[in-house]
Amino acid sequence: MRCKKVSKILNLVSFILVLSSYTLYCQTDFSSYIINIPNDVSLKEELNKIIKKDYYIDPNDDYFKIAFSLKVDSLGEVHSAHIRWSRNLKQTKYYTICYEIESHFNLLYIYDRFKKDFIGMKYVLCTFPYSTKK
Image (tube, rainbow, N blue to C red; front, side, top):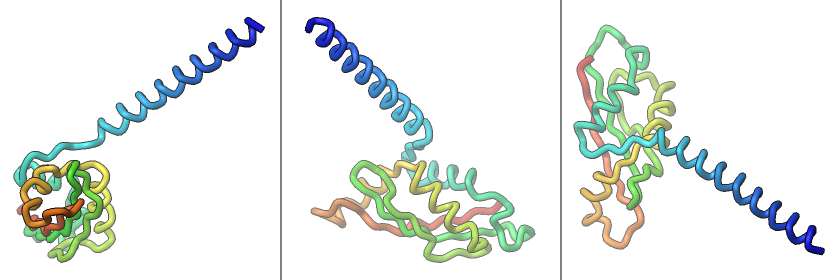
């Protein structure tokens, strides 16, 4: 009888250890990919890292414009990012850029900036203009 109790306790302890190590792995793995963006300048710098020359329709034209539509929650998580308008950007690259923003950016500063316009709402919606000379 006592052996069965000890065995059950050991199984429970080993299960908890395995579960906690998996949770710790997931948290550390996931958090290493989240970039906390504090302001517009930092967001533009991170977008400069994502958007490469081969994303351009005309690589000889250095001028580049995008208008992003963003939906951000109170934790800064981006729930949707869409390109509303662009100049000199291949349409096949829209998904890649929006996926990077949704997956790896924390834009709490955008929520804080626009929350007064969306009182009582879980999300804020905004359009973010981005342009650069490369």
